[in-house]
Length: 494
Image (cartoon, rainbow, N blue to C red; front, side, top):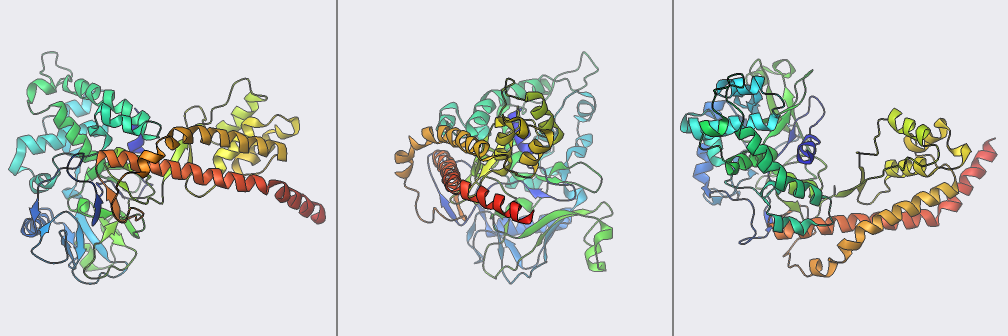
């Protein structure tokens, strides 16, 4: 399913941990009607009590210069965030969470869903985690190992899981729209399938999940998925596939695209000092390390990677006023009647590219080299251009086949982008009239109302497409001189 693959695409390389969490910031846009994330109000005392619980019950270690709250002044009512009460040095460990403190797939073995998880075919990781999380919340309650953390989780989220059909229409003509439409049908269907699964799959008389637990409603399932998508982290130990888990305290850190941090698994053997080794069990731990210093009195952020606004609204239920990682996906399928189709398809396959299902990413302020390479291959019609060697060079090494071919590539891409831009431009006047408030060009500004998120996604994609079309115009204007210069240089060298 689209949503599942989109979630999986955020999985990091082995050995690296990538934060999946909500967005927040000191500057926010949107309140009242349309507000998306709903969480109880916690005082500074509540958050300090939570910190003590995490340290004493789970063995979590937070840097001594950090506090949980919303303001660097003690005693204020606190929204979630992590702040420095004293200077934090570059390369400091911000937080350590022991392996046993993570809620992960393996913990299903401690629930009545163990047999179901072990024998039911096709049960997704997210479904196992959802059942485990909901069991801890509704059955174990205060006795759960993660009780205090679960109590601190939002009651609702603003990700696409929670958008109505009417709200989804605000995303029409954006990359987010097909996924949002699919989720309207996918989530109820996935819930019904999971609720109908037997607790003991090999026992015909076994009750189903839905019959056994009245709390397993579609709303509860949707909440659990929202928590997994926005609050869980992806972890990989050496030699293992990455998997998702809940890491207490991690989700208090808010996102900033420019934050220099490293997040990952560390084994006991990786620790340099006895003091560090004391923080880690033999199974290891996950840690956040900072690659920059943080001043006293300011908020300390995490960076969960190059995620565009369209991705953020899907997974986290927020967008940024200025997102340096904005982009759009462009599909570039090839007509089977294209000249040299078989040879061209072999080149694509040999380089691991399937244009039938794989989109190409177009990002802000740069020409999409891989997409242009694919178009060079697809549009090649001169026999001298259609050799495997020439086609591989055009795709893998960004080599221009000929001036005629390159101009055809430029025009093809320009037309495709213009088609994407047209419906977005039709909404420009209405979007520009939106009252955003201050600092809407800042990466620290977070948009959390659904209506404004939709406008933000449209503005982001419009900006990306317009910027790339401008680059194409400039590239085309200098193409002849560039190729003539390259030819003259080659003749001189010869």
